[in-house]
Image (cartoon, rainbow, N blue to C red; front, side, top):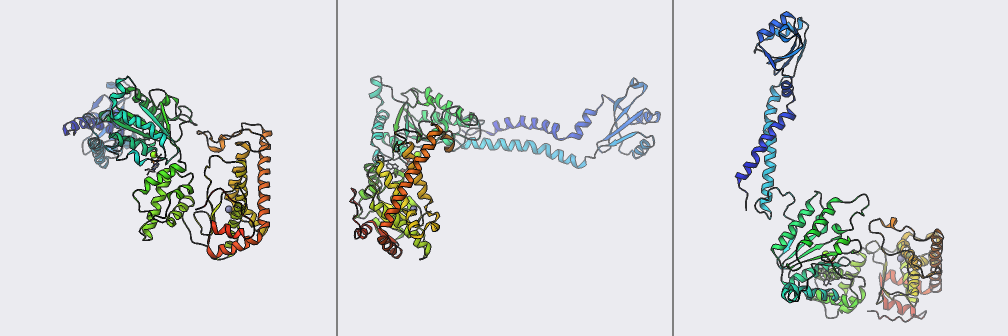
Length: 626
Ligand code: ADP
Ligand code: MG
Ligand code: ZN
């Protein structure tokens, strides 16, 4: 409903009046001074002159362009006390000033006000005009929004409160690789479709489901799929949108959201990034955030307010359930948690199949191989990968996506944009030795992932890259595998040292060394793989409320801290020595491989192994390479 202008005038009139007084009070000092100076008594001009002649006038203040004077005088009529009296001066009283001067009376003329009078008038008009203008704006806004009668003054409203999709168009078939989560939700869909089945036997449906998982794993997609499958509207808002500048806005948004949801039940309410509002109360460093707490409280109130059977199901997503306020996780709120993980090989394959549906992919491409090459990729990464490949295919004016485009896209997603190769130079040779160093050490170690390719084409930050085909299950790694990884990572620097000497080593290894140090440290402090023993000395998760560095305060004695450092050093030194040995022992083939790499820019894994095999037997690794 539109608000009528009648209502508008009704509001603006009192504001006009009030503002006028305000203006008078604040911004017209001369007039007000005059007004406060007004003695209760007045005097005619003639009488004033008489007083002047009698010498009873002590002081004169002229105001209003010399039209008014306030005099201080004593006299018998005034009870012999100094009093202030107001005198209206005639228009032409030029002789007055000289007269006052002669009589040596304190005289003060206050600034003339002919211009300021105009300003005053303008001001008097402008101020209320501003107010009315502002009010009118507010009216228009609230009318344009999801307005209703009597909402003119609810400031917390704006158009982009939350998104509502009547139909999401997403179905369960669009979601792959997260089957456990999907099964949990099929029940929710049944409830939304046939609530009778549940209510008949007295079952209470969970009001809230919490989806927990890393970004890009398909949480939003899954929530949308539920709405799509059940054919109900989908309301969504992000936790970070709640937390706004104006206090009280978050809470009012929650209220609005649930109000709308109730009107549209059955429906799904999706709250993304709920940790932004729902983190543990009172733990923030530097004091709590009232706004956030109010929003959270409102959310809790709303969730308590509706009965489980109204047909609203609240789905929230977060990547950190551990920091959520425990009040959110109590029964009757988000009492169900469904975790969504980064997909494994099978999951990746399934997700690739979903996203390959609407793309023209060459029949030689096996999604299986792509899935194998992409451990750690989330659903979003995989979707992005196929899309990149499709774009590249179109750019190359090909008709279908081939392995070539997919390879480039994987490289791009992992390592960034491709750069232009260096021209042959000393630094190019050094980079070549560095990369071949990684590749040779990696190839000759039994427990190292096999080389997929070595390239001198820069990508992202890297000036050359050695790619390895990752092992099947990266979540279970043996001690020997980690040691091999460390040796492989040190292979680059080792080659620089052996070939160019200690003085010539470069900063190119800094990233390798970071990885090496972190792996060695984890071996000692997390995996119990050093002679300190099977102790867990540091945990993976740092305190979410502290910065990373701050959180790692020691759970162990200084004595252990020294031992940790010694063990890390020991591991790295041993691995480095082994890498150096491998490089020394294979110097001949390394020189040959470097020449080949500089010539060809890229050597693929098969050819690489073949060449090495001419000199040294290459250990047979479990994994086949594409
Ligand atoms: P999240 O909300 O967990 O951060 P999204 O649901 O927004 O992730 O995922 C982003 C996109 O990635 C989706 O729109 C979809 O294209 C793709 N995606 C992610 N996970 C999956 C999955 N399990 N199955 C299919 N596609 C997925
Ligand atoms: Mg999301
Ligand atoms: Zn390196």
